[in-house]
Image 1 (cartoon, one colour):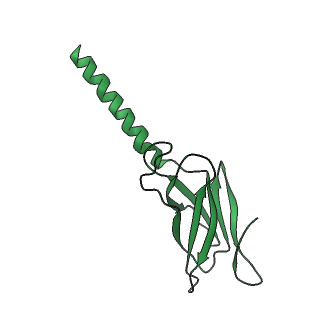
Image 2: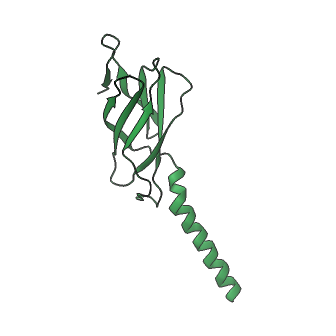
Image 3: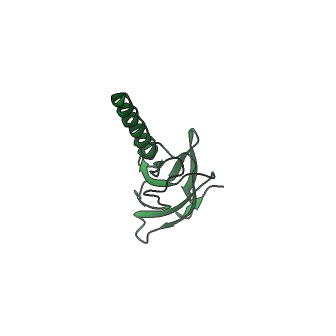
Length: 128
């Protein structure tokens, strides 16, 4: 009986750890860009983000694009469960290639254009 109880406790602890930390490896598809600032050298951009739903935090971002003209951003959830905030961040610094003209963010199940470089002025603008 003690052995069965010990196994059940270990399994429950493992499931709790998987839930607690596992969420942090899932894409956060509810992140929106709220503001941005381009460096004077035009070689980096700082973006401000928030969460579009009532629960969750983002902790990191990864550019998954192979095209230097497009940045495809995939954000990842913070650790600590569905509404966990371990490692949470809302400001991210992105390296900006001179060829980059568009920045997309994974939202729900598709990438959406959120920032683009104005062809006339060369300035970055939020996409409405």
